[in-house]
Image (tube, rainbow, N blue to C red; front, side, top):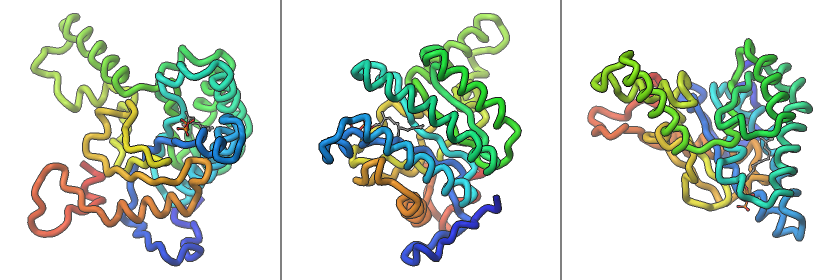
Length: 264
Ligand code: FPP
C-alpha cells in the first residue's frame, strides 16, 4: 500500500504534513469500561468495540506511512482485574490475531510484541508467535503489541541483563550508557515514540514505556477508546505537528525539524 494514500480531503479541517509524520506513535487505549457502562453494557462490550478501533487505527496509521505503532493492550497490573474480564481480553487478543491475520498480510504490516509473554495463556502465545513469524518479512508498518507489559519491569529486565554482562566481565560499569540500556529494553532496536496518545481523559503514563517516553510529545484526549477512530488519530498527529520539539535544548535559529529529530 502506498503511504499517504488516505483521502485526507475527507477531513478538510485537518492539514497534515506528510513530510513531518511521527515515526513512532504509542497509544494507551483507555476507557473501554466507561464506554460500556455509559451504555448500560458489560465492560467487556467496551473491549469488544475497542477491537474495532484497533483495526481503524492500525490501518490508518499504516496508510499514512507511520513506521511503528505501539499499542498498550494489557499491562502487568491488568492481571489483577476480575478473572472473567481477563479471560475475555485474552480471548479477544486470540480472535484479533486470527481474524486480522489476512488484513495485516495484505497491508504488509509486521507484528511484534513486548511484555512477559510467558504469563499469557498458551493459546494466545502460540497464535502470537505464529503471527509474528508470518509477518516477520513484511515491510509496511510495525505494530508493537504490549501484552502483559510494564515499563518498570522492562527497565529491571534491562538492568539485570547488563548486570549479568558486567558480572561476567563482558562489559565494564563505565561502558554502561543510555544507548546500552536502550538496546537492552524490550523495545531494543525500535526508535523511541515521537507521540504518545492516551484516550479517556486520564493524565497518567500507567507504567508504559517509562524510559522510552523521556522526550515524547504527549497527547491526551477525552475520547474513550471505542470511539477513537481515523479522524481522532489524524487530529492527534495534527496537534503533534504544531509542537516544537527541543529535546531539552534551546531553540535558536528556528524550529528543530521534526524529521531531523526523528533521526536522533
Ligand atoms: C483499558 O480500558 C483497556 C484495556 C485494559 C484493554 C485494551 C484492549 C483493547 C482495546 C481490546 C482490543 C485490543 C487488541 C490488541 C485487539 P479500561 O477497561 O481500563 O477502561 P476504563 O478505564 O473505562 O475502565
